[in-house]
Image 1 (cartoon, rainbow, N blue to C red):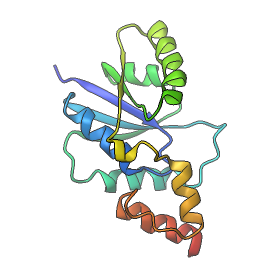
Image 2 (cartoon, one colour):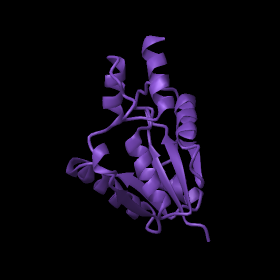
Image 3 (tube, rainbow, N blue to C red):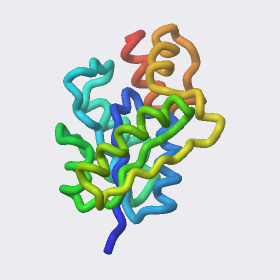
Length: 160
C-alpha cells in the first residue's frame, strides 16, 4: 500500500525552506500532498490560485507530489485521502511548542495519523513567508530564499 503524507500550510509564498522539508518527506513517503489550508482568519497576499500555481511550478521537478486545497480540519483531510502522516516543519523551539499542541489534538481526533516533525537544512531555519513578503515589498533580492517563479511573482505584485 502506498504511504501518503500531507504537508499543510498557507504557503504565502512557498519558500526554499518548505521545499527542503518536502524533499525530506519524499525520502520517507511514496507520495506527499502539499495542502493549502483555507483559513478565513488569515489574510493572504497571494490568491489561492496563485499559491497553487507557484507550488506546482516550484515542485515541477519532483515526482510523487500533488497539490490540494481544503477547508477541512487537517487531520480530517489526511484521513479522507488515506494519508498516514502529517508533515510539519520545525525551525526553532518556539515552532515546536505550538506544533506539539496541534499534533496532540490531531492524535486525539484521529490516532491512526501520525504527525512527523522535520527540520529544514540549517540555512533555512530563519526563513518564513512573512519575512519573504516584507523583503520583497522593499525590493530586496529574495532569489536565494525562494524559487525563481516566486521571486518573479512577488516582484510583479509589488512593482508591477
